[in-house]
Image (cartoon, rainbow, N blue to C red; front, side, top):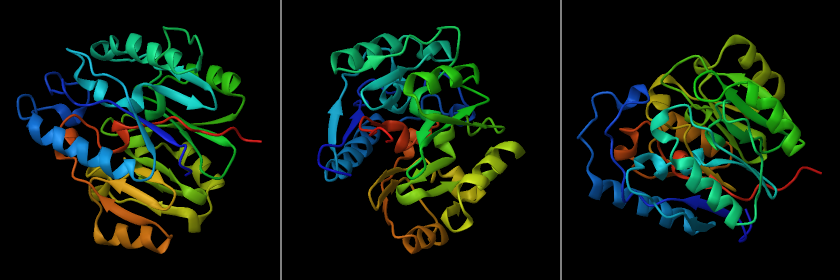
Length: 275
């Protein structure tokens, strides 16, 4: 990435786990250590700031999940598709994210508000091919895919999630520099796995097992040859290093309680157009 690359983050000032909207949150109410969460967020921000510019959106009271800016929307060039959240608890975030996109010069798509779409949690640019991997099954509805494809004028490859623990594709699927892909195949249905395998050659696929997937290894931030994640087993670290990546473990234990990790806490704002 160049020096002009930007990542959007939101401080965890109002972060809590007070409701359950995914399986990871069950039983976690009241267990959060906010000081630890703040320290973990700041450690991630500082690590990423060595490789990219960090933009900040102000946190808002009573919106604990606003910290997960990956779900603000999806960005491509100077266009953005703001999210329409499926869980009612997150819908009040939409106003703030839309205002941020407008204030920062993005052209916004007026997606039908009856259609669920949860941003870069379910819409990821391939790092080599000219397409967007776009998920559906839990939080994003396939009805959003056609509108995204037309607005961004780039091919959308639809992949379906089948395990409620992996409710956004960025929890189990991470496109990496030079066309590598780190992913957990059991999170996807048969046709989606065929679609993935037909576009990503075997030597570019980095398969993540159940243990690593449960530690949100796929929920990683990739900048050039750097990979930032909560935790990775030695075999997974070795596979990533063999592919030319440097693995940076950044503890995200408090955010895992809400079903998120490093990637969930970031939105990449610089996605150059395919020519």
